[in-house]
Length: 153
Image (cartoon, rainbow, N blue to C red; front, side, top):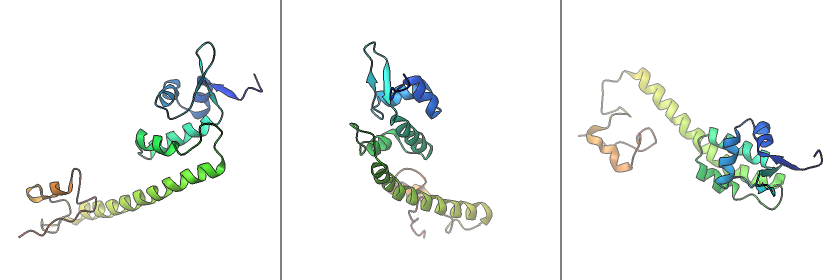
């Protein structure tokens, strides 16, 4: 068994610090490839450890399973992904992470300003949404996300 490159579902869970049920879910969702033994037990290539680690990191960063699935689709299933494969995937995420950092920085600055401002002018407030005017931009905290409030009369 020492020379066997495959891992059981329990071994993958232990190596990645997650639950067997999570590994099963990732396999069922097509996020990680698995194989079946003659007796029906799942087993995995060792390279799946890196995929699971990527999934856990991406989830921690707030990515949806669909976004993670799309990213992992760029990796080959028929062989162990190379450093170049992972670098390519990393570049895709790097740009998105930079955009998230910029959004979070803007939010932090606006939030800090609002908490300490004590402004008495609702015309200048980034959070004031007179007559729900932000709804034309879509759902969510539109002004904090960068949409500009219209000038009030």
